[in-house]
Image 1 (spheres, rainbow, N blue to C red):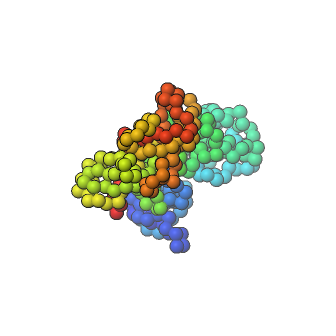
Image 2: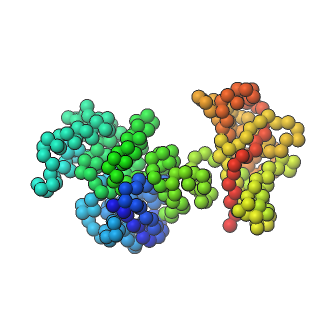
Image 3: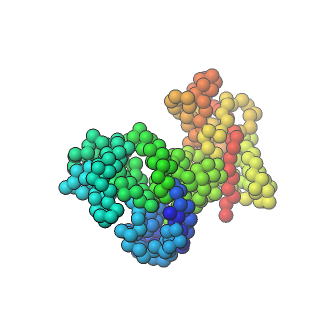
Length: 362
């Protein structure tokens, strides 16, 4: 089922939660709504579900206007952060509930209900809790039961709000893989809300990056990672270093006098001496020991965290007029290189970007 979102606006008092948001979701897609708290992603999900009403704008499912269709008739399954289970029912009965209340003509046989519920509980790794009650479960376990219950009725649209937020890292990673496999098997249109960049990039077909009630960028995980459309997207997707400088005729200059780094920015070749910002990811910085006369950003290594194959370095720019001198600069290099070079905290190093993105101030 495809979903067409057109000019959705939502205001809560003086707070604008959504400002004329439009979005097309293809049938069978798995879409992530990604952004910080308060960006409007959960409000948009609730409007799609029919749990919230937009002040203006329309929602259509496969071309049919569902803006004013009751939530019960939208054929959506949803799991929100505080999804309430029936306290008086066992885990098994909670998951079976949606199947048991179907019209008699659509209701599966008892044997099929039993098999389906057990299969779903196995998938969420809680089959051993089938006879327990919600009050006997942890918050994370309750979320997994809620997810199983939403899937039991095979909805045409599945809506998930931070579905794995309450789980520990290992289980969260397992359930991500499971959700992806399940989605590929069922081909159900799925929208999930998350503030976890890794989760969105790992699971989704496309990522919708939101900020302050607006859509900043829509694209595949690779597109939004490799080609961020705005400084916000660049800064939000993973760790990044921000340097300030001047852009002039296709180049940006960062650093202090005598230690200037020239960053090519051919997309700004017509810009004349304008303020600009450059974003560099930690793994895109070359790091070497400083020798007098070296060009680059000279910085002192203040902390090194070597875990597994990667060395994460925290550095501070040397004294000077560089606006970033009081900011921590992060770099990532192979642990083998760190040990071979014999770097130690207190060493003076020089950094040069291999890859960077320049944004000229508006």
